[in-house]
Length: 140
Image (tube, rainbow, N blue to C red; front, top):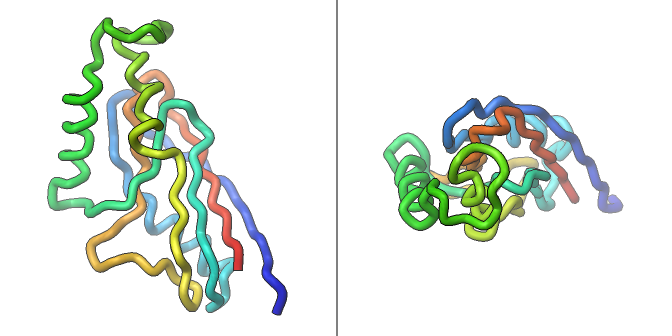
C-alpha cells in the first residue's frame, strides 16, 4: 500500500492563564479515523508564535513543574523587547524556542507508540490568546 497523508485541525480553548493541556485523546481519536491499524508518523503542530507541544507525564505534577520552570527561566516581567500585549507578554514569544511548536511521534498499528506515562501536551503561557489551533498530520 502506498503512503498516505492525512491532516486535520481542531480548535481548543486555553483560557486566560498559562496551561499545560493534555491533548493525547484528541490525537488518538484522529489516528483511529485515519491510521486504520497502519504504521507511520503523527505530527502535532501548533501554528502559533506563543505555544508549544511537549511529550511528558501529566497528573503527577510534571506538567505544573514544566510551567514553573518556564516561569523561572522566562519571568513575565518588563525585561522583554517584544512589548505588545499584557505586561511580560514578550516572554510568551520565547517559549517556542524552548518548547517546540511541534512533536513527531511513531505510530504502530494505528496507535501512538508512547511510553506508559507519556502524554501529548499543549503548552500555552499566553493569556492574551485564549483560542488555539492544533494541526494533526498522519503519514503512513
